[in-house]
Length: 482
Ligand SMILES: Cc1cc2nc3c(=O)[nH]c(=O)nc-3n(C[C@H](O)[C@H](O)[C@H](O)COP(=O)(O)OP(=O)(O)OC[C@H]3O[C@@H](n4cnc5c(N)ncnc54)[C@H](O)[C@@H]3O)c2cc1C
Image (cartoon, rainbow, N blue to C red; front, side, top):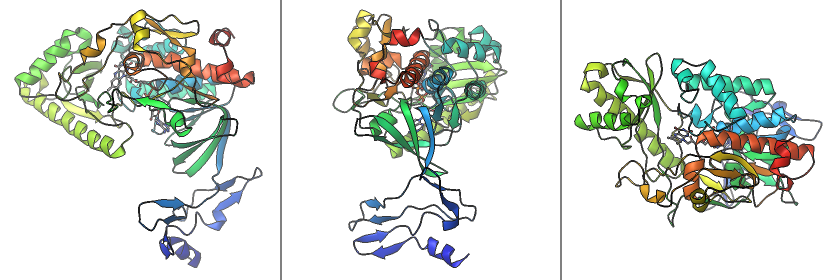
């Protein structure tokens, strides 16, 4: 270790008014100023840690970061945050329209809840066109017999990962995984002009002409200062989170009646079997799907009252959920017979989040729109999935809260303006963070709707760059006919 190395490691120093938390960002020899003035800091190979200079307040409750140059990691016409079903569709649509696209994803794969969440079922896709049809075809053709029989709606998450990566690479989408968006910058015209991320590269800035928030939780829009709504009622109560798992060790012929694709009674049959043997799952409509060759997915967990914005609460829910899945599988194994070799292949790396922020857009889809079957002149797609609010608290039926279904729903349009942020310019949303109320969200959130929303938002973002107008100045019918 050199002297300068030693001094760099002296990152805790006392000073007047607080604590200096860091001495330097990087070795002088690893920092370089590029032609456009951005400071690029190469990943240190010497074992140095990139640290932020800062001062801890006297009361020890806050840390003031020192101003520092953030390297601009990339510039694109369209930047998409979040590579779930909505984000992948947005990135593909924008790239295929002929603009440069940067896709930023915090997980280590594309697909969001489809892959990192181990979902395995696409709902409300049957009446869709475009990228949704293309994905179903790929999932079916490259998947198992089950995938083919279900026209790609029951898919293998590993096939999905590969298909999504291949399509994005082929379309020329620049992909950055393992990178979390942590900030957004607007200019004096109220346009989003840059976002900030954190990754193994440290803190980076990304510039783009247009942005699409497909983070599910509305992270980009919230950082840009957009208004949003969360959950229902004064407590902002949200639908429960759920962890999914992949299982193996049972013969599909022997447990056929418990497999969801055998009919809707499969859920109550499986619940009956569990309860008969003293297993009380936190979600009382257990769903077991056979994917292929004795590999199954299981959804039988609810984590009630967990905020999507509280990392400690999500951590605790994740640990509880994983333990519950293993306990349930242990319990089913003790049933014996065809279940005696049941075991867990994998639990989802990401617990499934049903609800985050609903960003205020230029149209808000409401329960009334579902009840009347909204027809809108700028319809992006038609949603047919019913109102689906899972039990909000553990003291209910631990299944579905039917109170929210009182006014019913008919097929309804998702209007383009619901994808356009109301409070800043140059920002669209797609997926579960679009503009709508609690009840409407419980229906349009499913992935058969997220994909066409993403496709529309990505295409509109690209066209708005090409025509040098803001997304809210576009008419969806003109965009779609291009
Ligand atoms: C347990 C559960 C079961 C469900 N069952 C079904 C079902 O059977 N069928 C169905 O169609 N739908 C189902 N849904 C609903 C559906 O999964 C979601 O509403 C859907 O995933 C929405 O897609 P999305 O692309 O908006 O969000 P997501 O799939 O959540 O994707 C968001 C992506 O953004 C990334 N991200 C988030 N924040 C950041 C950030 N700050 N920086 C970078 N990346 C970020 C995430 O890692 C993720 O990849 C279910 C949901 C849950 C939770």
